[in-house]
Length: 131
Image (tube, rainbow, N blue to C red):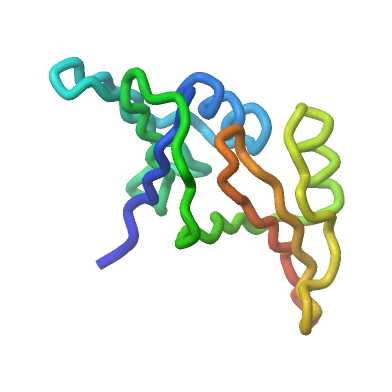
């Protein structure tokens, strides 16, 4: 068994695809409309679906906003340098909600950004191979 994807419902599919591809550097892997069900699915990721888990963006036609609820946490992405990753997100118009720094009660350097729908994305700085 393996994890295939995580699904997020989005209010504006093109805006979300642009964030994940242009701001976070993922690739649009496939996009399909389902007119009978009135929804569109787009799969994005850093690698092909056969190589690793991806994100499924689901747009239900005519729904432009969702209540994120209190159960959702975040998506985690490993980055070389959390400060530089935050600078890039800011430069491309994204929102940084927690600047890079050590996690509370730990040493791991993390940061948080949000996508256009408010979903949290954690950057986890790659640890030095000498640690």
